[in-house]
Figure 1: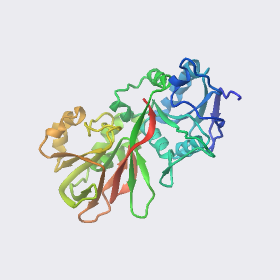
Figure 2: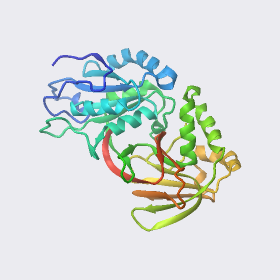
Figure 3: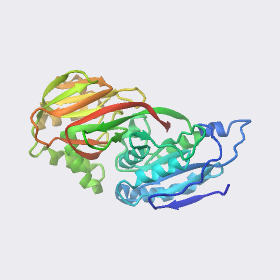
Figure 4: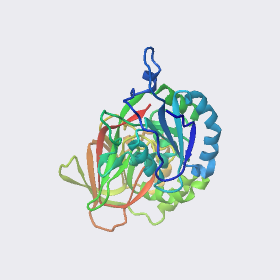
Length: 353
């Protein structure tokens, strides 16, 4: 098999070498005594070169020599540069269909979000073309973007060298993914936190100020507060009875713990738990956020009287009085407005951890 070395691929449908036989599930197995591999493994690194005002692209170029020194003897390192929104979704799907052993998101939570959505097509996991034996493409992450909230749940730092060492080690764990549905709409997947109303509106505005780094979250929150009103929402948990939740400020559905640049909004969530943590903030005023902001960041806000928390496999959320103005986002990506249903897909993806 021909070695790819560093193959720069920037088109929507890159072509990758196909595996000729089933591979071990992790790199450590491939390097264990007595194991003989018939080919080099294909690892696809999807990079948003414009992420974090271009810092992602610059840092990635610096990383390449180290990446090659640690992985180049055992792997084909395939570099795919995204050219715009949703490009990472297309690259991921094609990489999986061509039998890649892992697709690694290089960037922030937005890039990771697109890569996760690329694992699915038409409500099902994407699979390898003409596969006669089981083959699982793993998800990997090198955090290099403005926000790296998902990595915080695992205790990972923003040190890309640590991330490369995780990839070298190759240990894998099954993780959960959330799916968002709307009547008559497409399915949408998320791996970190989905949220509704004020926090989603703040995220929507923050996305316009990413050139300011983490300060964008502060600017987005301030802009979201202007003209904000709490709303009565009704929810249905695990397909049960509808419940009224009055004066909701924000409703967050956590598959992981952090969002908004380090706010530990769903502190008991974990991507391997098999369920969501749902946190509802009710009747918050602007001064409540000023006084309780430290609690939101350190995850102790669940003790506050007007904060509710519960576990859920699924949750539907609708307005009591329809205004079509209640924002919805997932992993920092704006999705539109209510109503929506959020459901867990337990252990659906294998992740390099």
